[in-house]
Amino acid sequence: MFGWTDPQVALFMMGIFLILVLLGFPIAFTLLAMGVGFGYYAYYDATKLVSIFDNRIFDLVVQNTYSVMDNNVLTAVPLFLFMGYLVERAGIVAKLFFAIRLASHRLPASMAVAALVTCAIFSTATGIIGAVVTLMGLLAWPAMIKAGYDKKFASGIICAGGCLGILIPPSIMLIVYAVIAQLSPLRLFAAAMLPGLLLAGLYIAYAIIFAMIKPEIAPKPHASEIPPRLVIFKEVMYSFVPLFILIMLVLGSILGGFATPAEAAGVGAFGALIMAWFYKTLKWQSFKESVFLTAKTSAMIMWLFVGSWTFASVFSLLGGHHVFEQFFLGLDLEPWQFLVITQIIIFLLGWPLEWTEILIIFVPIFLPLLEKFGINPYFFAMLIALNLQTSFLTPPMAMSAYYLKGVQSRNVELMDIFRGIMPFLAIVVLAMVIMYNYPGLALWLPEALFGPA
Image 1 (cartoon, one colour):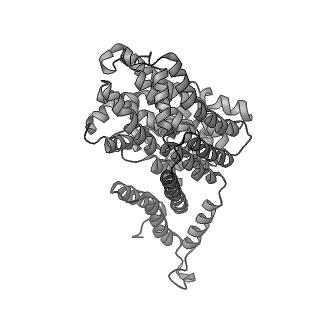
Image 2 (cartoon, rainbow, N blue to C red):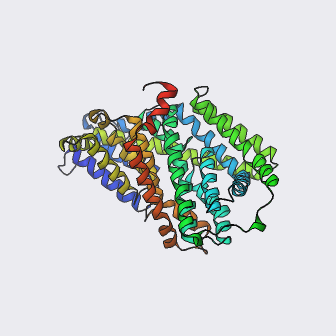
Image 3 (cartoon, helix red, strand yellow):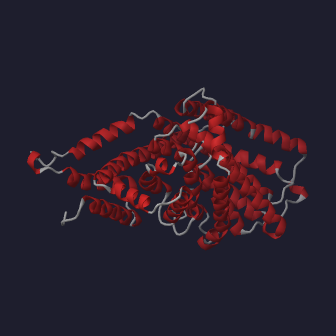
């Protein structure tokens, strides 16, 4: 190709892909098209050419498509998605937010705390960032503004809290990561529990402390707005306990080794149906929407895998992975230096790209180097999971900000949302520093549950 070497073609392939994604082309089909186009060049053999379709790249696409459809881990994706969409469409989250809001009324920034706790709990029912931010943007954001909360503060709470679903199990991102890195999804779920709680706890601590320092940003509720304790207790028991039991049943069966992620997801989906029936919110229209959105999102994720595996296979065949591996090894880095550099790269990639592009295209470049630097793959996965929070919070992409802007377009400016997000970006970095210094946060629970990896 114009006298270029194969590694140069691989780097050109990567550059063209990034340009097309930034121009707004769909990532799944861009990956597939780039993989087929450059793969045709990589596998081209004029001596064996019988017809234009006589090229191994087409066999590779078929093989990758079959491998995705036959992957047992990915079976959990549509079931968890259905569980999340059903919980969202059935109005269960609205009941949950109201109950937690009542229970936390004595705390500074009580509505912000309730929103963050609701986001954390809702995240265990769905790993869909857009769904959490959109729903909480319609539910909690107007309630906070009506109560006199600062718009920037309220926006940061919703955007940051909504992104917890990328980290807190059962996260769709962790399932995707498990397939990409060939790691146990059970161990990944266990490894993410404490870091997820740590990040949620830091968010809540920030909201409380900031409200104590500047009470005007989060006024306390009037005494007339607080119902009697008995009412609060009944509301919490009615709205919080059933969902909590369902989540503990799903996560407990996974972490306890009683069920695979797919089996637990099936239980969760069935449990969500039962809850919607119990609350008398199961409508035929909501059920149809949940099924449609599940099929749509599942198809997108599956095509992402087909495209990414095809792209990655061709990129590796052309020597692209080898170029990056030799580059890092040539720097003669210490393990901590390698970790810092990779996390900075992931953080910077979060400015223009979403987590799917980062995870599917760039993370596999670093994975073969972990053994050479003596880094635990599950610890590295948790650093990546924390870091990927920033891909939703970092302008100019900051998709969580656009989700919130989409549902509150007339009520808040995009720059105010960005300003509200900034403190939470700093908190994510703080959480990464804490976990780096205390790796047991990521490694203790999986080892306690499943033994050494």
